[in-house]
Amino acid sequence: MLVRAGIVAGLLLGASAVPALAVDSCGSMPIAPALPSAADMLKQPAATAASTKHDAFEDIKNWQRDLKTYRACLASLQDQDKLQLQGKDPTKDADKIKRLKDDMDAQSHGYDQTVDSEERLVNQWNAMSTAYCSRSDVDKSSCPKH
Image 1 (cartoon, rainbow, N blue to C red):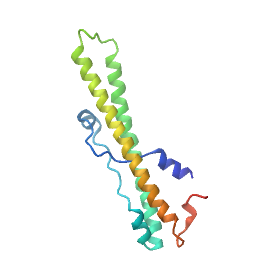
Image 2 (spheres, rainbow, N blue to C red):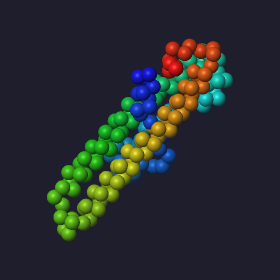
Image 3 (tube, rainbow, N blue to C red):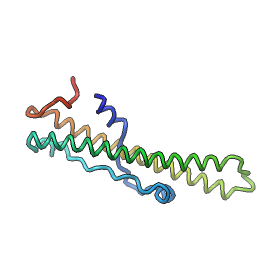
Image 4 (cartoon, helix red, strand yellow):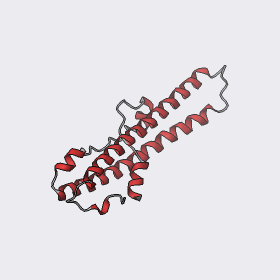
């Protein structure tokens, strides 16, 4: 249950490009692992399905670790921009204020993309895991108790 909550707490992959500043300063958003479909999980022999499920879980955990680092970078950039905004005079620093606000919007958009990506991955994981757990020929110790 704790494992499942940990996966659900995280989420998947953004289709559109992350804003240029975030990419330049933080690198690219980590690429989500490819997970097998529910149908694939039903077709595999039991031992292969168990191994596939375990490997997918490990891939997700590693990806979420990388995603956490990426998000921390975006948050740090946003914090720096917020500090730079303090005390700016709108009449004298209009261009700088606009640039900082645009950067902050881009960072927020990049962060939101990570959340959308993570949500998609969790939905894929849940479908895959549900398919695995619906089988009668597998070890269900990793499946939720009903």
